[in-house]
Image (cartoon, rainbow, N blue to C red; front, side, top):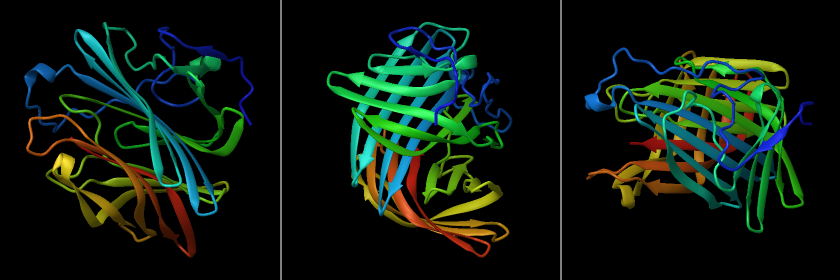
Length: 319
């Protein structure tokens, strides 16, 4: 299942030499747009954001097992701030087992991932990520990345790739699929836009990605990609509308819990509904606070004459 490579675990405070973009060899990190971006604080003009997410998902019967690792780096002229968070979701319960934020001095490669405390990284040839290991006390969790499908590229150079994979919890192995996504931006705000990773059985997988957060001057434009067996599908113009919301008092915001998906040409239509969630308010001057919500979702997509029952994760964020 795993790729045939010379591999090594990198841990402690050693900087891992792996580029932000996914793939077998190093690629330039995706660049965020600069034209048309409103900058409110000129002191943040030189700030850059790099985001790398790995999401393992496995569906059995009507339940889903999800392990998201969300990693972000913020590069300022005089420092680099890193954040890493991870959860295990199963049976509708979200267990946040890793939440670290740390700062280092400037580096020539801020997009490279850095092990920290219990987070270790399995490195293959050309510094490609082959796995993620968390070991702290008696708790042990490993994600192993397997064979890769072709990568998709978004409008801003962001990349999305689905791979086979496995999760190991102590002595238990769970087979599934892994989404490896990377995006970057420059300016006062990090890369925005909700995104989702959805499975339909063992043979079909879908990715949705918005180009901006909700609440701006225009509704977000989504792109969608899909794989069914060996057939690759993509939809460059997709709308994702909120069909129902619920209040999230800690952030004094409403968050979506049902979504309707439709491409401009009608070639894909669908609906999604949240069945469980992990929501966290952020810090800010108020009155509305930032919010990050991870939803376990279920639903159905119609593509041409085919209908897919889907189950997976949708990540919603407002800053």
